[in-house]
Amino acid sequence: MIKPKQIEKNHLVLVVDDQEINRDALGIILEDNYEVIYAENGKIALELINEHIEDLSLVMLDLMMPVMNGFEVLEAMSASEHMKGIPVIVLTAEKSAELKALQMGAADFITKPFDMHEVILARVGRIIELSEGRQLISAAERDRLTGLYSRNFFREYANRLFTYHKELKLDALAINIEQFHSLNALNGREFGNDVLRLMGEEIRAFLAETVGIASRYDADSFYIYCIHQDDYAEVLDRLQKKVNAFSPNVNVHLRMGVEVWIDGVDPTQLFDRARAACNMARGDYQHPLKEYNDDMRKREMLNQRLLNDLRAAIAEEQFEVFYQPKYNIKHNPPKLVSAEALIRWRHPELGMVSPGSFIPLFEGNGLISLVDSYVWRKAASQVSEWVKKYNYKLPVSVNLSRADVFDLSLVNRLKKLLEDNGLSYNEIKLEVTESAYTDNANQLLEVISGLRNAGFQIEMDDFGSGYSSLNMLSSMPIDVIKIDMKFIRDIETNETDRRLVSMVIDIAKYLGVTVVAEGVETEGQLEILKTIGCDIVQGYYFSRPLPVAEFEMLIEREIGAKGEKL
Ligand code: C2E
Ligand code: CA
Ligand code: CA
Image 1: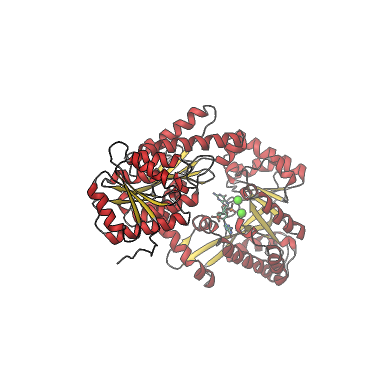
Image 2: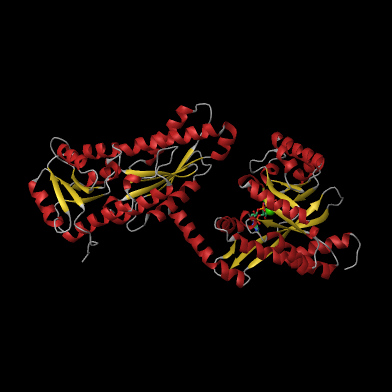
C-alpha cells in the first residue's frame, strides 16, 4: 500500500468542485490528514484563495464548473504574483484536458471518479511536499531568449510526463539550424538571436494548438515533446516559413529529426534518436526532415558494439597503424619525406572497420584519446624501428583530436614518448584538424602553442573545411597546412578551386608555412600542383595508406634510388 508521508493536520487544502458528491468524496479521503475547505465554483474559489493566501497549501480544482471554470482559475492564479506559488491538482474526467492544465501551471491531476484513496493521498502529500521544497511546475525555468523551457526543466518535466502519464504517448522532435555558427559569424549575433526568438515564438504557437512541451536545448537546437502529429513536414514547414519571412535575404535552413513514441522508451532515448535523425539531415537541404529509421537503428547498434569492444581491441592489439607516404614534388623524381599514421581496426567479428565509422564515434565521447595514444605509441616505435633497420629517418605525422587537447599532461606525455624511443622533435609531427581551431579556439591555441614552443611541428589538417580565414593563418601556431582534399578533387576542371589553392599556396609561402596537398589521385592534379608551387603531396596517386610491410618497400625503393646500401 502506498502510504502518504505523515503530514500534520495544519495543512489547509481547498477543494473546488460543483458536484457535491465529489466534494464529499474528497472530504472523506482528505479530512483525516488535512484541514479542508470547499468551493462550488471558480469565483468562490478565488475569493477563498485570496482570503487564505498565507496558509493555503493546495488547491484541488475541478475543470468543468458553472460561473467560472477551472481553466480560468488557473489563469487567474498564474497571473497573480501571490497565488501562483500555490500548487493546484486538477480533477478531471477528460484525458485531453490534463496536459493543457499542466501547461497552465497545474502541478498534477487526478482522474474522476476517485477510487484509489491511497493513491490520491500519496499524490496530495507529494505535491505539498514538492511545493514546500519549491520544486513546483509553476516555478518553471524558461530560456530568456525564446520563452521555452530551460534544458534541465524540460528534461525533468519530460521524465515526469513519461513516468506518471504513460497514456499520453508523446513523440520526440529535434530541430536544428544549419550552420548556425557561420550564420552568426556572417550576419551578427543579433541576427542569430532574432532567428532563435522567432523559432521560440512559432514553437509556442504550435504548442498552443496541440499538446506538448518544448525547450531550447542547446544554442540552436530545439526539443519538442508532443502528442503524435500526422504530418511533421508541416510543422517544420511552418517554422521554416516564419524564419524565411523574417530574413528573405539570408538563407536560413532548418532541419528536423523525429522519433515517434514507443512503449516503454524513455524521453532520453527518444531524444537521442530524434537528435541522431536530425544529424543525419545535416546539409541535406532537399530532405530536411528525417525520421529515425532502421538504418539509424543499425548504426546505433553498431556504435554500441564498437564502444563496448574498444578496450578489448586496444588490449588485444586489434588496431593496426597504416602509413601513407608524403612526397616532396620539388624533387625529380619526387622524394619520400614523411608519412601519416592512419589507424585501422581489424575487428575479430566485423572484419576491417574503417576509421570513418569509429573515429567520429569516439570523438563524440572522448574515448578517441585512447585510440590516439595507441597510434602515437606505435608510430613512435615504428620511426625508431626504421632508424635501426634502415638507418633511415622518416618523420611520421600523427593525428590529434580535440579531446587530446583537454589533457593537461599532453605536452609531457608526448615528450616522454620521444625520449622513450630516442627520437627528436622533428620526427613526430602533429596534425590538428582545422575545425578544432575555430571551435574552442582559446584553450586549443594555448595547448598547441605549448606543443610548438616545446619543439613539435604542427600541421593544420583539412584546411578549408572549417571557418578559419586566410588572415587568421598568420596568428596561428602552425608550421604546415594540409589543404583539404575537396579542393584538390576538381582542380583539373574547376577554375575557382585552382585559383583558391594557388592563392592559399602563395599566402602560405609568404608566411613561411609549408603546404601539403591531400587526396591527390591523378597525374593531372599533380602537374597543376607542381605548376602553382605546392611543395608536398599525399594521395592515392603515390600510394594508399599501407601496412608496415608494404610501406617498407617504399622506403627500400627510396633508399635504392639514392644509391645507398641496404
Ligand atoms: P585525414 O586525417 O584527413 O586523413 C586522410 C584520409 O584521406 C585517410 O582516410 C586517407 O586514407 C584518405 N586519403 C588519402 N589519400 C587519398 C586520396 O587520394 N583520395 C581519397 N579519396 N582519399 C585519400 P582514412 O585513413 O580513412 O582516415 C579518415 C579520417 O580518420 C582521417 O582523415 C582522420 O581524420 C581520421 N583518423 C585516421 N586515423 C586517425 C587517428 O589515429 N587518430 C585520429 N584522431 N583520427 C584518425
Ligand atoms: Ca590527418
Ligand atoms: Ca586531412
